[in-house]
Amino acid sequence: MNSSRSIFIPKPLFFTLSGLAVIIIAYIIVYQLSPLPEPWSDLFLVYAIVGAAFAAAIFSTLVWRSFRVDDKPRQVWKYFSLGWWLWAFAELIWAIYYLFDPEVPAISLADPFWVIAYFLFGAAFLYQFRLVSTLSPQNRSLWTILGITIAIVLALICTFLLRSFEAF
Image (tube, rainbow, N blue to C red; front, side, top):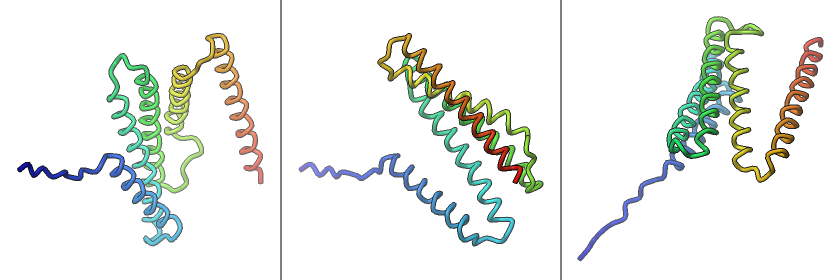
């Protein structure tokens, strides 16, 4: 008689979603209710963001490494992962600034990391667009130039709006 029992082994997605739910709930509770004494709530919120950025960097690196060298999505995930690592280091630098003085400078050492990360995220999305695009090379170039132009115009509009709000 064969008495093989099936053993329930939860999928990694279950653990990921469960952990994510716990982190989000903890963040909301600390943000809304401030159950910790004054400096600790702020530090928890700042370093939770740092932890989330490093988690994104680690998991995106794992995804990148899961592809073979000749797999096309590997290029997308390479840039996405590099962007997350730079973003995580920028968040860490900003958190260290905040640890010593809650008045973080408007321009800091973290800013170049964030700016370069934006370009890497853009490169990742561009590679992804090229992978899924069914457009001809000429139309793809036109859409790429149009997308970059729209991004630059939106960045300029946002910069103008933010600077106009600073006057008030």
